[in-house]
Image 1 (cartoon, rainbow, N blue to C red):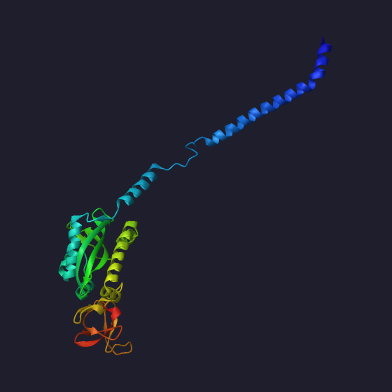
Image 2: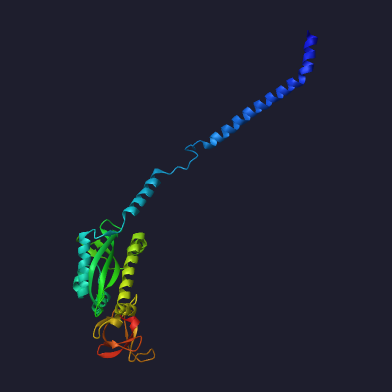
Length: 299
């Protein structure tokens, strides 16, 4: 019987080996596929807290607060009656050359400011004043953008304009215009706010209206070009107006840098305008003498 088994085994050995080989291959494939499936499953699993960067709650709250403040500080139109009243009063006083009232509405108004207002005889009035505000550095302060129509003397069409101011409460809990440009923190904040998208849109809108007004009225366009972005108020001031010396300068007998120096005037000195002299010079009167000062040194 054993011989018969050996004979059967001998006759079927190759089939048995082939079957075993197939079985081994199947087993290897099974475990290989299982291993690969396990690897991919781990990759697809959500990372644990240790694997993911964790943002502290303080940082998250801080960032959220900053975003909220930025979103909340949008440009508002005529939103604060007290601020509107202040701005209306200020520009009414500007048009009327009421220096005393302007002093009451600001925290600083020096001789240079007075001369600027008094000499601006080319300004007839401000109308259609609209007040836009953004929150300032403190709760009771605002960055203010004032849109208006500026009427020049002897020019029929008013010129759309836009000014930026800083409004805050004084010690008497009354809103005033901050007119002292020595506060670097406020200056920096106002410059930052000007770059906001809604403010830029307002600036573009006013510039568009101004360009349209100048296209429609050649006289307005000519006056604006003469006035320029940094108009020399001394040049456009009326004869007889009081001008202020901007910095130490020479008071000369003739309209020339080679002319005799009558006196050395210090910044802030008041002189009386006689008339516009040769290009670049203004004839003025000082302590009974008549001479010339460069128009860039007067305001």
